[in-house]
View 1 (cartoon, rainbow, N blue to C red):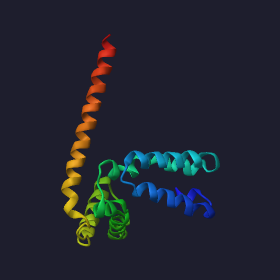
View 2 (cartoon, helix red, strand yellow):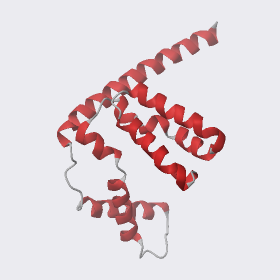
View 3 (spheres, rainbow, N blue to C red):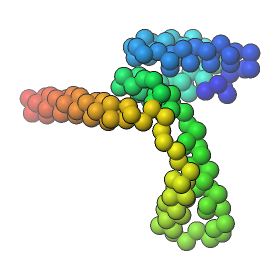
View 4 (cartoon, helix red, strand yellow):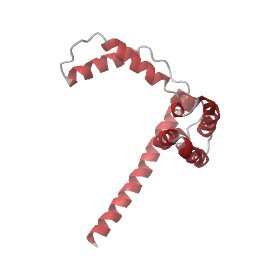
Amino acid sequence: MLDHLPDRDRPQVKARLRRAWASDDHALALDGLRVLADELERSYPGAAASLREGLEETLTLTRLEIGGNLKRTLQSTNPIESMIETVRRTSRNVKRWQSGDMCLRWTAAGMLEAERQFRRIVGYPDLAKLAVAVERDLATHNTYNSTRNREAATLAHA
């Protein structure tokens, strides 16, 4: 998203993004990011679109009320990028990809190789809290969706 901005505007926008992401109040953080996107819309529509594209997802941990070390760890893309680089390194000598299955096998082999480098997640004691929060969130969404489906079916039959 910052790549869509001129260098002079990046520090202020980055600070506002970090402030929103650091917030423990999901609604306040969401409002802050939406206001920022609205402000960027006129001068930098690409940046505004990029921000809006992942707006909800960037605040998932805040919505689930996950904080502390686990939030800091899971907000980073470094572990994923490291794993992807290991997969690339593992499969770079393959010259002729024969099938999609072959690609999947080499990807799995690379992920197993990357697994050896994995360390304990900082904040791992809160993983149980995360699991409960995800289950609760899924139950809430499933209840909401089944209610909407019943309402739609009722309207369709009326």
